[in-house]
Length: 514
Ligand code: FRU
Image 1 (tube, rainbow, N blue to C red):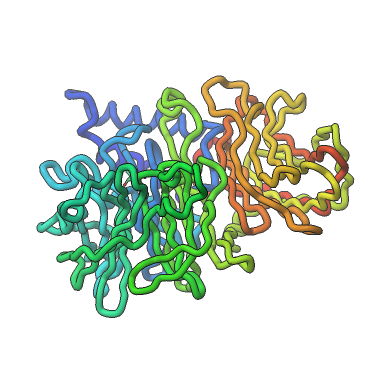
Image 2: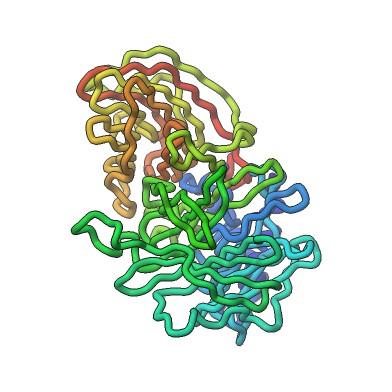
């Protein structure tokens, strides 16, 4: 757990790291006072999540190089320590003994003036090379691949003096991008998959190999957007022209490739043969559009754990005023589902955050009314709801509702259209935030109950539905009493089998309690 004191010390470090951004002549003392004020503002911000990992302040996006090292989970992430906007990317760094409680560590990578990463240290991965933790990441501009090693247990990082280790895309290839390396070991070689694409053709992952992580040879593409296999009439580049942040790994007897297509996060499960990946089953890693650029790791228990960036859903001006932007998702343990799809569930460690518990059992849910449940609710909750949908057309949960319902967010399983949606039309009275529904395909089987596991954390909603679909969304209720919780059905009645609600404990003092 990060103490308030650590938190403030760290913020000073963050500020020092960003001292070049201070106006000329501004004294460090004034800077520190400003920082203290910023910390107080952040700590009092009702929209700032309480039990999700995020930087002490300012901007974050993609998770980078998550790695389990000597009993601890290390997480790096794209971070601008100088403001809540994406500029001049650094690698922020945090460490956790248990996947849940985090301590911030000094920034791992910053751009080197005049170096190949002078304009930013973009996304990448971490591997252990003969006992030495090593980061492989993209330097910009142009997009080249760089390497840094740590000899002191991941605390400080020395960049390879011969950077970049890959200076250009393969010869003759007109790529839409060339970034976000993912590296793994195969027998006595290193393999590297990199995000790319070709204009008019689609996204692509390119494959390289190396003996020493320094000298890389291009092999061929690992996988590409295959227009010939799309239904007639569909946009030939419907998975985009650039695949970012490829994550490639074995899962049970299959291989999985996850790519971020500058729209959706698409996963494929399939066969890896002769160093080509052939997708057999595809789906979305998240049904919403708030979750992006995920990366995975394996821990000592052998679990494949995926982390994603939860982006904001409000205006740049609102992010600027808040002083922070971007949140790390909760970890998701990945397995191969019985239906051949990707199954995702939070790890049991999350339960350590559970506080006060309430349970409601066996409640008829009648169409046409949205009754708030008495005495339950909040903005930092884990909710398990199991519904017998009966012949209802739609069934779901209402969260973050004011007593009069003027603000409310609906989590709905539409049985008729086979969709799971977060309806944000009335989530906030503020004009500065995203509205409308987020979601996608989710069909319940005959006689299957709807099992929603919902994590509410201030402006973050993460939903796990029947362990096979995830939906992440952002809401920014403006009223202090937008805390109510209810259940609803449409068309016909349904039944709430059980509802468990836990208050979740904060992991860092992000909000003043006095
Ligand atoms: C994905 C991404 C990556 C890139 C990074 C820059 O969100 O665009 O492709 O490396 O963010 O911050």
